Each structure stands twice: as C-alpha cells, then as structure tokens.
Image 1 (cartoon, rainbow, N blue to C red):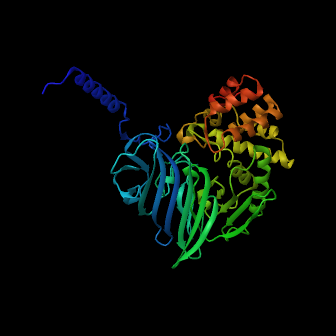
Image 2 (spheres, rainbow, N blue to C red):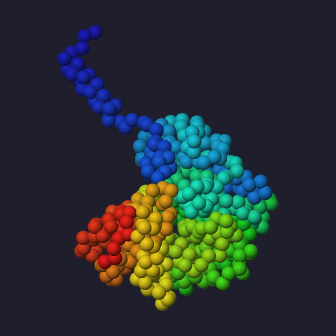
Length: 464
C-alpha cells in the first residue's frame, strides 16, 4: 500500500521525535566503585548519595561474631544498573533493593549490587544487606602504627574507625564526602551496654540480650560511627549551657585518674560553643573504655571515644572536632589538617583560656622544639600523603599556621573567621582553598602565599 505525501511526512516526523527521545534518555550504567580520593581510591561509591543508615548489629563477645542486617537509604545520582557498597572481609548472605531480592557479587572489599530493574536518577531507594562474621581490626602505619576499627576488649568491643574502618563492620559508602543520618541498634548480652552516636532512643530486653537503639539526626561521616560495647558506668545530665550530655566510663578506669571526664566535657562543650559557634549536635558526651593498647582517642560524633582515661587536653581536642571534622568535614582526606590542625589549635586556645600559657607561647614552643633538619618539616601538611596523614606536622604545624594567621589578621577577624567557617559549612564538606578564600575575604589581605609557605613547603619556614 502506497502512502500519501502528507502521511509520509507525518511518519518521518514521528520517527525523528522518537529517535530524539531515545537518544536524550539517560543511559543506564554502573555506579563507580569509589569517589576518587587519591588516598583511598576504592572507598565511597559513585552513582548515589547515601541519606540514612539503619544499622542492626548483634555482637557476641564470647565468640567475637557479629551478625548484621543494615539498610542504606540513598538517592540515585544517575540511572543505575548496579551500584557498590564498601564492606571489608565479612560475608554477605543476601541483598534486597526496595524490598526485592537483588543479585550481588564481591570483589575485594566491594559488594556490587545489581537490582532487578535499573534505578532512576533522582529517585530514592533502599538496599538491605544481611551479613556476618568475625570483624578484624585494620592495622598499618596510618593511625600511629596502632590497630583501629573493630577492636575486641576484655568485656566487649572498642570501635574507632578513622579513616577507613567503618566498612569493617557495616556496608555503606565509606568516605567523609558522603554523609548521612543514622539509626544504630546494638544487641549484646545482658549486663553490657552498647553506646553509639546521637541520643539513646530506647533500651529493650530480648531473651538474654539487651538492644540499645541510638539515633543521630544530623549528617555524619561513616568513620565517625561507633558501636562500642562493654560494662560502663553511665552519667547523664546537661551542661551548664543546657546541652544534653551522656558519659560512659569503664568501671576499671572510673577511679584510675584525676581527670573529670564528665566535668571537662560539659565545660569544654559550652566554651567551644562560645568560640566556634553553637554546638552542632543534639548531645555531647564521651565513651571511656579500657583499651590502652589502642593508644589513641577519636572524635566519634557526639561521643568521642577514649582508649583510656585521657588528659584534659585530649578531651578538649576531641570536642573541638565536633565543629572541625564532624560538622564541617573534609571532601578529601588530603585536607586532614582542617581537622587536626584546628583541634590542636583548640588545645592552645584552652590553655590560653585557663590562663596557663598563651596560644602564641604554645606556637613558639612547638616551633622552637623542632630543628630545621627535623623530619617534622618534611611533611607538606596541605597534602601529607596517606601513610603520614596523621603525622605530628599535620597537628602541630597546622596549629602554628592558625596562630600565625591570627597574628596576621588580628583577633577580631580571626575569631569571626572561625565562626563564619563553621556556620557556612555546617554539616557540609570543605577544601583548604575555601578556607583560604574566606580568610582573604574577611581580612581583605592576600594570604595565598602565607598559606602556601606553611602548608605546602618541606622546609622550616621563618617566623614573621
């Protein structure tokens, strides 16, 4: 049958329109297996933005076995045929996407999930993973040569995950650039307490176990999550400024040191709220566990974990991180001085506040104690490299940089800078260049040369 000319034109137009729709429709593709951080290329995942974690962990200290069922709620940032979750060493038994079974396979520390149907860009979805095994701590030179992550204690477990150990006990997008809110349910034998981030929602008994349900309603990086379990003496209340406070201390350590963890935590939370801006979370506190072999403390969000009864300086350092590192987090690990330099400088501000030593004198003491040929100066703290990302230079040279900046732009502008920084980037992610730009804007001074000297050279700079 022959077509009329008008019919042929209509058919051609329709075909062209259909071809345009087909070519314009976004193609489905797998999500990237990492976010491209040079220090940890395989951590974090592309193709989606994690929004919320609902973690259910059942831990038996006798066998050291962890059984988990965890749901990640996320939003697809592209049309996805598959996506990845970070999970180290533990065995996955099933995965569901939006409540339906999904295919999955494993390569290295990545779980690749293939849902029945492609996930549409902009749509929310859930991924529920059932898994288990015996979690192992990570080790190596990164964290002062110490083990870190999921670490067994005499009565439970000490959980401190910076920078890359959160995925050793739950599946997710394990990079600080992908923050989310959390519900964490910790099931452990009766007599033990599970302590985590945010506020305690409920405590319930199930057979010979107790479930502690914690909720963090503010965005949190995965490495800041904890599920520390053990025997604890718990003290609750409010700081003088009104912030709820929850402090859990291992009874073995409760009377072993003169440091008043509860009192210093309350005092420092209120003081930093004056210096840095309003406290960014619903609750403050501390977890002090008998784990001296860990040799470090960590700024886990709302409740820093201490591997022993630490000093007053350590407590104020970890609490300063609630602003610098927890609320305002790095986009990439190379900018870690924005966390550690700021928290170390907070220790100098604290001694100044106490009237024992000025921040200027602390800077001079740190500067003069290290000769020009010291390895301390060889680390370029603006990009310290993975294995030396927690070197002493990142901490102390970062703090020196801030004190010298303060002296260059004046107290009024400097403390305005700190408050503006924490306010503008509250619950967000940042880079060093943003801090430099803000310092220049508020001070009206050209500062890129100053920052380059103190952050990016491998020699001892001369003091101004």
